Image 1 (cartoon, helix red, strand yellow):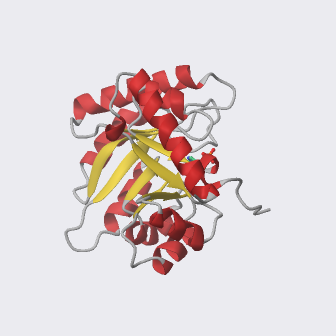
Image 2 (cartoon, rainbow, N blue to C red):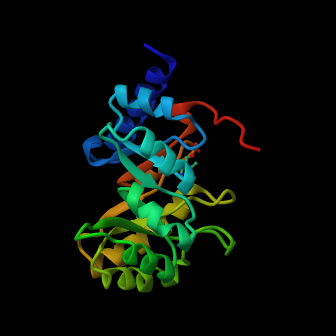
Length: 226
Ligand SMILES: *Cc1c(COP(=O)(O)O)cnc(C)c1O
């Protein structure tokens, strides 16, 4: 087995263990492999190993890889901060946008719709005190979710967050869980919780994450990008 294959199965075993310990079924958890900064060839290798969900955090890199690998059945998850003027390209190349953090971005994604296609989106919640981090503050998350519900070309699927560096992930994810539950009472179909990265996916699974975004534990260290 290749090193990549070995790391992928090791992570998948840890996911399955954590799910069982939390009394959940591993099959209800989607493992997204974050491939940012890595070449398209790595995504191709991952696909050959059975990976179908991949994540990127920059529009240009997403678009380049999606174009290059167009013949593969991959689901592209956009997980980065998005500029409004990139909404058209993001909508064209992503299957899911995890990082809707303001009404203007939701509006721009909606305006970029072509035909009657519907784009899956998540409301990104900022769990830190730093307004420069991506995401809407938890108190405003329901309002943003309601705004998204008013845009027919977007399908609200749930919430996404990154745990702060200076807090136990379990307590941060508990706040996300509360926000997720409030949004789900307004929109029962919005039952995704995108949380958990290399360092905290076990805690995220315990808190109910449905979508994990795992990079370096699977891909190895990211090539330096200055
Ligand atoms: C890079 C990134 C990840 C994956 O990070 P790892 O620590 O390498 O697993 C997950 N979510 C977001 C938003 C990211 O930018």
